[in-house]
Amino acid sequence: MLFKPALLTKVVRGAPLQIDLSATFLYNQKFSFGAAYRWDAAISALVGFQVTDQLMLGMAYDKETTDLGSTRFNDGSFEIFIRYELLKNFGNLVSPRFF
Image: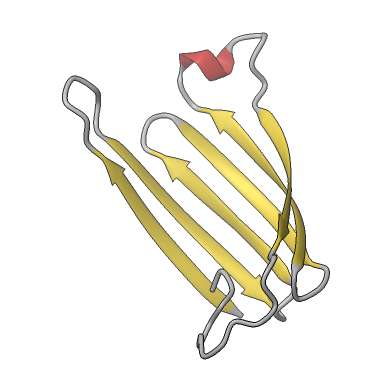
C-alpha cells in the first residue's frame, strides 16, 4: 500500500488563510481511497479504481463544515471523475502515476 500525504496553503490579501490537508492511499496498484480536510471549511472523501493503465474511474464526496453546510439546501456534493492518460509511453519516468 502506498501513502500520499499533501498540504496546500493559500494566502491572499484580504481573505482568510486557507489550509488543505489530505491523505490518499493506493492499494494493489488498482484501488485509491482518501480523505481531505479544509481548515474550518469542508471535509472530503474519495474512492477510485484503475480500470486499465490509462483509465481511472472514481467518486468523491464533499461536505461543508461551515454554517452553509448545515442549511437545508446544501447536503454536500457528489462528484464522478474519469481520468484518461493520453500518452502511453512515459520514457524514463520512474513513477508516471499519481503516486
